[in-house]
Image 1 (cartoon, rainbow, N blue to C red):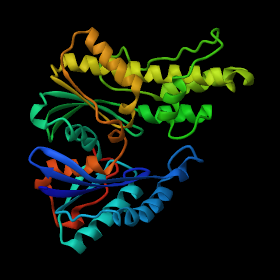
Image 2: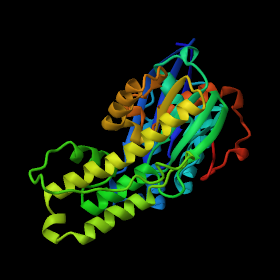
Image 3: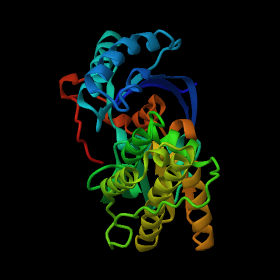
Image 4: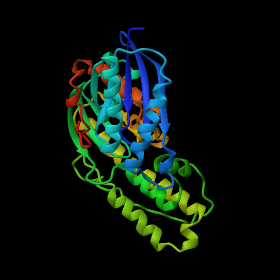
Length: 339
């Protein structure tokens, strides 16, 4: 079926390989493997050099499961944790040399956007589009005129949304990764209806499109510390705090994204990143945009393609195949790569 691309992603703590087949405008997943590094759970966060060690162990094991040949390689070069990025880059370079194949260096943030076109044909997407990339490491609003032509219109000044939720979950003892743990807890019901928590919505009224979630994290900590131990250790408190923290993040993301859509005359809205898998974010964005009678195309990736994965890297490699190179020395880790 057409030609095939192998995508490699080791930007953070997930090791992922995906083999993508292309036939015209249609894409088919031949293989897609993700190895989750459970070793970080006891720390409540990712240790880069520990993650690199796990990547180097996992990559050959995952590659052994790839059964078909391919014509092109694509690898995430940034942004991400530098030791982790290098693990994937060195593995991909060695493979490319062995097979005499070129490599497409991939921007991780752009890949989170482009993965939407796995099921939604690019030819049917209306531009300009506003893209919200929201994950553990990044919260950005991007104006997209076409593939390869982007303008960053807003980003977080400190903590990303996912990073904030991770830290809230760690404080409450809900586990890691924090976003899914917060989401799961927020769906539960409380018994103590008298318990109230009110958190700020940072920068929601500012006219720019930047974000700040550090203050929200601090507000959670202050509320936690002022409560008696029996309250803050209670199930009701944890549920209510999960609900309020998640809602505070959603309110800011939705409000700023909707305002950007109107100001920039966007015809489409494209979501990407791990936080975009959140059910409440999806539900509330669709509900509010409908209530405001906005008629933009709204693209959410499949939930399993919101978190880091090799398929989005392979897909990005396809869209940038003209950048494929055998000058491997020029392919380096760029931890702070911008879109």
